[in-house]
Length: 477
Image 1 (cartoon, rainbow, N blue to C red):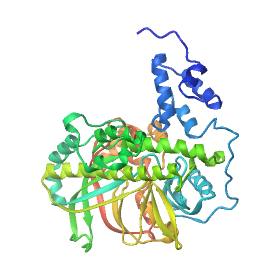
Image 2: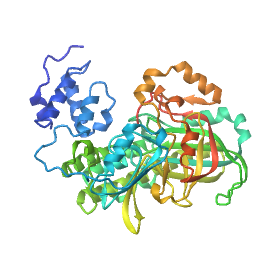
Image 3: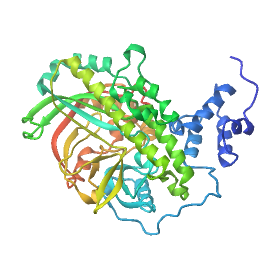
Image 4: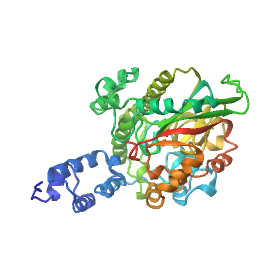
């Protein structure tokens, strides 16, 4: 194929919206990595990176540019900077021995925000963008898009069936076949034509709020009932109750169960990127806190984001509902109980007699009596829990085991044959997934659970048996 003979220059990038500042220099450096793209294709990517930087964080050509945009490189220096507090508000750490220094530093910055009221760090915490994953932050009348996270409303859903655990071993072939038939994974992937699902969420009035969200409606329809990439999964497993649970009306014993983890797909990520960009324009913070830019809930932008965040959360729930309904029907089982909880969200709650906005980025709600699911890894068990309502944890618990190895480290250092050996030892059949989701990349779930014994009670244990994840190990979009 004949290459275009024109080089991309600063004027080309300015014409599609790049500012004349330090960001322009970062953008031009990306052009030096051009491999196989024509000028037209490069400019199309440049525009998409500017509009949705989160989608390009792992891109070999545009990754550094995407991070520079998210980090606020080149923002107008003359904009007045909002100072952080000199003294941080109080926050609690659970399982400090298992938490990397970067996550603790991010939390220390977050609790110095002028709108911060209180905070907590869960034992599965690790470094993220803005608020660390596993970070909980209460604010006064303000919402932080990156305190919620990119995958808005990401959640766990568990269906427990009227099939005894021992029967799993006679159903493996059927369960695997139906799992492949009724699920779809991968960044950007969705359903076409008659394979699209229908759900009342698509008729919600919020889709008519403004042109921005209206333009996401078709994408939301195509991805309804899909699971994205990264650490998202759909898996069959065995649920073990060591005692009868009166609330769920389930006797002691083992049961077939379906556990899913995914969020609001492309719609949620686009909302997160759009309103983070707006927040950074109206709320200029010092560089170390730039990704914690917040929106006043009394502002139009704050109200818009709040409505769209809730829409994205309900959409994520609808995706799980579609998956569980398909697979329940496929195996002809009766659901004894269904439990669902979400993270990457913000709630209006009471704290010390005052309404606050509680951000749980990768943290599970754990108010007194509230049930949740805390997964381990593709080979480690997950746990059905009931919250104790610990005020110093802002009524929260971990949302999983948490990573002990970055995706890059896992891909670089782990060997496929070692991963296969661990899967075989644990009796787990894996469909898809990349090395970045290997069991060894995660913390010990038993240590994480021990570190939050004062936050939740364990009701039952889920052991994964057939796991499906994105074929290419792609991140959620």
